[in-house]
Image (tube, rainbow, N blue to C red; front, side):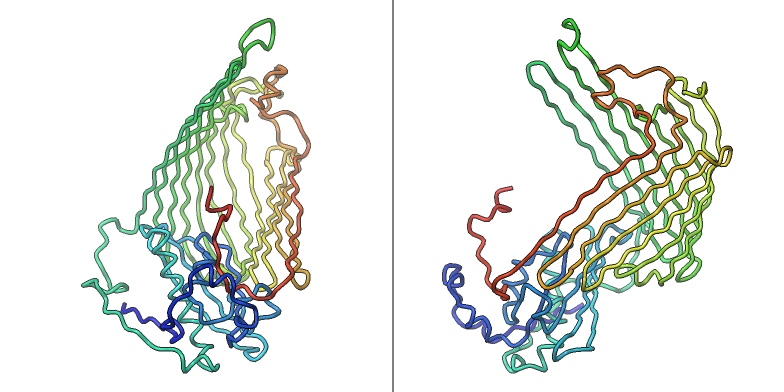
Length: 427
């Protein structure tokens, strides 16, 4: 597809040096006619780059000062790229105006290529609003001929038939005079994502080895833990709100006393909102029924070395990303049908909410009610095994809570870029 670049006349003025830019006063910046607040938290949301490349509008740090709220959301494509949705939400003189644009990155694109593509789509969207302001006479159109012989978007042969494969591995080694250890991790994934059916296959493995000297009369305590898993998911799209699928999983875990665990079963999901709106909002209900077989490393507290149990799961999840902030919450209930008192309830909440001008509240909380620890080994754990968390201990609950806030005040303008001695440049 041909590229069209809109270049403001002010770009033809001899460029300022960064030092000169750093000395531009607020009144000079305020001469810009279009005030834009950027709300983008994705991997490639490089605010400094956007300010450098789109310097013909006025970026502000608070949405209440903006004529335009630019909300950027994204979700992963089946091929491994990102599908960005850019919503241009008007306020003040543009109140009630709303426009959207999309950008899809290729999985093989570099960070710089994704950033440039996103910048161009962003600029094209901003022009729709700038054309009604005094900025319009200063805009010019520059056309760049496409270099590729085949234009993007045309049908092309796909020898991989939409399949995407990923492999990964890493290892670490650490130690000191009385402690040492190493770990090895690896993973492999195969995905095929189409409109009618989605297939995900994943493998992962982790092995940890630790040694501690002189814990008890000069003896060395050795701790090894293993965590291996393999899983597959197939989902069929029944409508714009209904999905039908099936899952299977196999795993081995020292922490959960599992020599081998296998589960398989069907699942159905309903979304209150169409899946096409999933980057902005979703409210899903998922129900699944599984048969799970367990083979334990050590005899359990119930005197079992293996067993087969039926279970069912209900998951309710909601996600909202709006100009006032972001919310994600989920409640999952897992119950074993052989004994209805054997269950687990997991809750998860993440909130970033703008309470008032410049003030945002951030909350992250997880809580689990645990009544399904039939897998615990009968033999007691040693003090050393407890300290290194070799196996899970008996508990009725588990929680994690993070609470914070941020408050921004001062000049409302955010046009100037000065990267000198920035902390992020040294990490």
